[in-house]
Length: 494
Image (cartoon, rainbow, N blue to C red; front, side):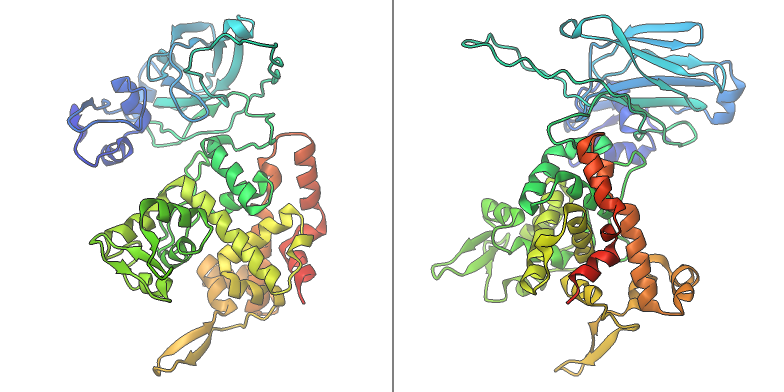
């Protein structure tokens, strides 16, 4: 049951409150006129949205649907004071968005109704109005996020002194109908997106992931590839919301893989203690990593004692207390950085670059690859790990796991087998039917075909390029046979 009001407690977030009561963040923001959904205060009293009618109740009433359009900019800040005209058949709704970016309620009386969305242009852009999108509502009550590809400036303009500046480039608006997440009464996701993200200096098109643009661009520079390649790897790695936005808080139910880039606990610690990585720099800034009098690196625990020694990474892993959990609070804070997009994206590319360097050191001609091919090898290494990636390139992954007895007499897996690798990804039934049987019963070939197929479908840099030369170039790379993973590994194979 949803209460009439809720008092914010310590540790609460708006998304957590919304999830608990089965409503959306947008609904709470609209009800309470919130201008920033990331800021709530302990003790703040929030009015909770009234329960929606069921779809059957709505269809039996006079109105088939009731829709509130909430306008936000490219980084999801509300656009307040926007003059809108919403047309449904012969009916028009005129109004101005409130402080939470919401326009007046629009009621539709039939299933075939369409809302035509018009907004007033700023005087500096010629005035008048323009049609930015159309939206076909679903039955019931809904709040629809309408997202612009532009930022909303909040700073005052200053008089320019000196020689005239170059006039700003005029960008032709492009209308997008990519869906962003919200809910109907029936729980279905529905929204629309408007605005002009393209063109831009990088010809980078991220859609619902536009808030991560700066990190994608910075990560691309660190990795030495175009940002479209970074976005493609991210898109393949990340779990996604219904809008297509990469989920920052995803967790694997089968392992400790966490965050956008699904780093395991041990792998994350490994990158953190690697000199020169973005995560390593963060650890130094926080005071977690420092050098002792002899220059040896050490990790400061919450109780101010240190973990040190030549095997620092190995010793830190001893503090792990289960998936995503550490016995030390400082190490826990480090693990939790996987939930922050900045560190997830930057660390993914640091890790990818290290893997490419590792292959280069082993004599593989990585520098001869184009950016699409590099992106596919990056994903290969992140997916399998560097050691198994080398086996994949050389086609030396065995059918079954290779098990050996260590010095303590314990049996351990020396090398992963194709059977386990493929079953883990698609399950045994699908593996046999779709990949193994058609390839003469070979788990090795079945696994290779599956991974090649997956990358061809998911590592697609051109999908993140604005229309034009950059997209054409990336599509050309993808269309050529050498763009396929097995063609790339064949070219690298020694």
